[in-house]
Length: 519
Image (cartoon, rainbow, N blue to C red; front, side, top):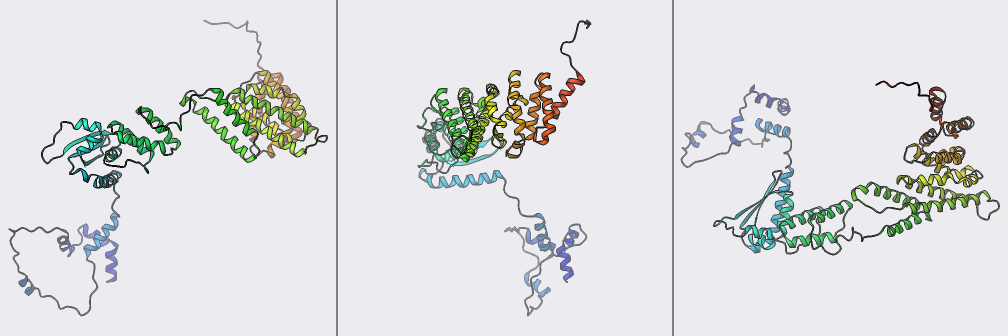
């Protein structure tokens, strides 16, 4: 018996029955239980009475013990089919949308629509993708609240007992349109709890159907509720498209500014930059530097989208550059004569690092705005600063050499276009200092890309005339042999110069008189 039940549960028997190998004695009875029973008054009675059937087939005597209810073969097959079939599929998104919409609208109409009597208009709204929603509404409500419906329904009379059928086709959003119609029934049109995107949709529909109370409710909501930055662009765009004549005071004041001149804007930039450069808290200074750098880059990227924009001026940036250079020169002079001074040497060194970091930040902004050519000349002319630089220990001055590396990287990448004389003067003034500080830059700088610095130096040197290339690279050759990894590795530039000098030997003033022109 246990083996038989196991065989039945495995599903093999049901498969054999389906394929016709075994006949089921209970299949007919099971089919009779599943099929609905239809009776008719004219149907003839059965040919065999119940008493005759009982006499012919006597019932077995009842058992003294209750027997367990056994599952029939058909029930096992049905359970097996259900387990194989799995749970029923969830309703589609369109069905869910329709169900939620029906629940929401029926709730509104059941509370607010009863005072208008029986509905006399069947409003059907459909979208281009085939979604359609119908609702029973009242003609008086539509005509009273919407000038569009009042005009369309004027003169239309339905047949006795039948509602007027109104169809609105090709809607952008059926749900929003139906919500706007439901709003006509509401005595309190406050939209608290709605999303900005939904209210913008309601505003457009209310404007289209000339539902003035709905338009005012949407505008009042938009004036009060906070917007995200994405929502801000949508609000401004929708209000610009609708060109509404009466806007609540302040709805766009949060995003629009009064016409301002570049001088007043530059005053704000001046104050912000000065605050960062003079900040007392180091952590706050780093955070605000990163914030302003990002905002200035964002302004550059968005300039095409928003047209003319006011930006920080060249004069403001170079004012702070010169101010930081003067402060750095003073700190270096004081550090070189620290034994004679009154202040602590460590304090002076911290100020040197701070001013060098400020200059690096300003140079980064200048490079991003293609305004850095003038600074290369300023930095190359700082011969007295370079002289003071050589008089203090590397551990206190290496941040200054990062400015030179920063400029060479920009020149090597083509982001900074300066004259030949400016490039020669830059390397003549600061290259030796960079050689001396390179080891400390590698070890002490948290963010230092050795390869990027070396590539920038190589590319910058290779833009110079051959005589300058030779002088610089032969000097580097000696320095690298003595310092090793503490000197930038410029082998690639050395190889290129070598091939130019001894392999290809391109001559710029060749005699071209012997060339013939073939026509």
